[in-house]
Length: 495
View 1 (tube, rainbow, N blue to C red):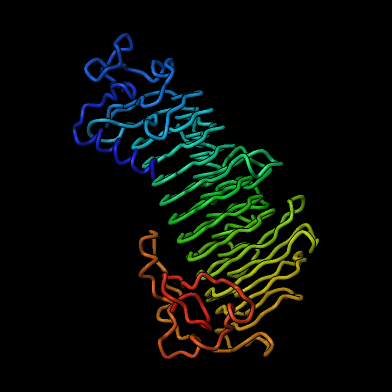
View 2 (cartoon, rainbow, N blue to C red):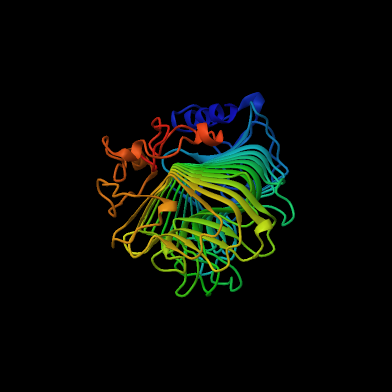
């Protein structure tokens, strides 16, 4: 709550005409292209360059304010600055419009060992992932209690925004586009999930991040990717048209995903039309990847991705993957290009079931007009996987690969070419969707009214499934894709 109050306060300070000086609680430093670095940095006598700002040590309540609608060349570096909850340090624009930091071949903003800071209302622009830039756009390194709000980040070869070994971070309303490795990324040391923790990524967009042209050994071109972290929320975020220029053939990018992470929640998100390199793998919508534990994807829409809508992966060398849930999501026409060929894809290159276990997939709606609904890779050793109360619609087939010892109960299957699932798998029933195969959403705001896959009021799919609470004691959240109360034995994501 303190951070939200602070953001509201600073917006009032900057845009409602209040004089921007913090008095006893700090000092405001102004930067104007018409200023002079020999000035005192006041609003009446502003500085001119970022270099002058980098030479000061910031204290609680201080602010750095760039003249709106103007551009400033260089990299803003804030090292070991400490604000407080009541008086955070603030970095923003002032006056009319948004200020731009033009960082050329380097990062636009670097925060290091900084606490209680808000950065807002800025555009960060690099020289372009193939035209000179070689860095992240905005890096938070070993920081705590930082909020980034209302940033436009573009033109960086690595991630647009990178959080590394930082805690209690809020990333809100960030538009990360036309970067290389990723739009937004979270990372930490390879052997530690705890140094990056308590992170919220909310109402963000990651679009048109094609790939890192220098990375020839691993995936790049992700929308939002988080790894080596704990307790992370991705909420009301979208990712589209990422990954199409990954410069290699092999494991590929995904729209929104996590790996080597614990207690991640991805919800109310939209991932569509994401891609991979020609002949490359993945390019999917959402993914719980290697080493993920105690995590959840819910209330999300994936459509038109080259890879699967919902990827369940464990790679060789990852820590054990277990106790994860995928529920109340929709996949439409995903997996039509890369190797999955299905809306849901299960893969385990560790080839060890002891490394890949305890997964619950329930009350999802998976629609594939051309391919299969579910696919199991040849390498997919696993145990204790259960699929309950899902609607699976396939084009040419329903399941690819071996379902092994997985539990399939209460699911409804419908193949558009007439091939049904076995009787032990559930029901063969046309769900009579309102408008399948025609998703066109481009913002998360449209998820609430997306009714293409609602179950008709008179359909027996509202009652033919399992009561998961009564039968297994499972707390299902009791809300469907739209946030409505779910029938106790309903099948599918939307009622």
